[in-house]
Image (cartoon, rainbow, N blue to C red):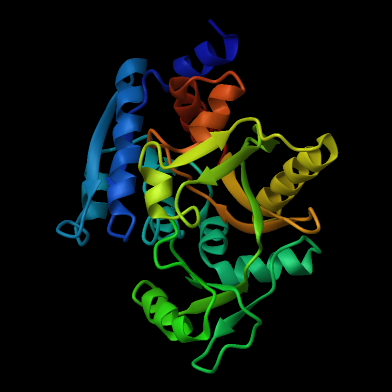
Length: 314
């Protein structure tokens, strides 16, 4: 058995862990699936944990529930607003409870696509052109991608190829966020790079069986193929891995994240799409796949996430 694994297990053995699951965002269903996988790992590891379902009914009492549980650390099995955007992280900081993943600022930056875009451009990192939609006409040459400024799982995202579909796409995005971003569409290959403790895990190419890597392709078994490691030229593979770590650090993310890219078909240039501070941990999720390819079991991955949260102050 690996020495690091035994050390992490000893660190966690007498700690009380709170697995906060679900949440109240549009990504609740996926967060529950991630949390179910995490719970299975916690049981397998023999760790002391309690399962806390953060849901619309208990949202006003959730922090009282957490405080009364007298936890040493929280595993955040959440995605989207109120879980991945820094709000629950801030409350945990005030209560003096450690947690997995990034802190308040990094979570907020990563969730807000406009802010993260500005930081990427200021740092000279490649990302598609964009603008914030403010009720005026389309300002870009089609095709474009219309998306809510916050949220994930491609919920509310539309690839617009015709002017007649633009306003419909804006209305859909606004169902999930008051702010809407319009981004240049990059035609090409989609890849993603999970980052674990400032190191890039194997690059994954995603080949969806839908029009693009949407909610169905992400979370329905068999609806996308994952090429792992991605079959890219060595220089491109290394460059994308480096960009992923640079993005992770630039956005102040801690311990783990997943950085999504498009490789433009004509130029072969990689473009950073967005960063995920609490990537999925479901049966079809990419971070666990990359970790497995790098030699880490799901249980070892979860243990590392918890140990990282305990060792490092947020």
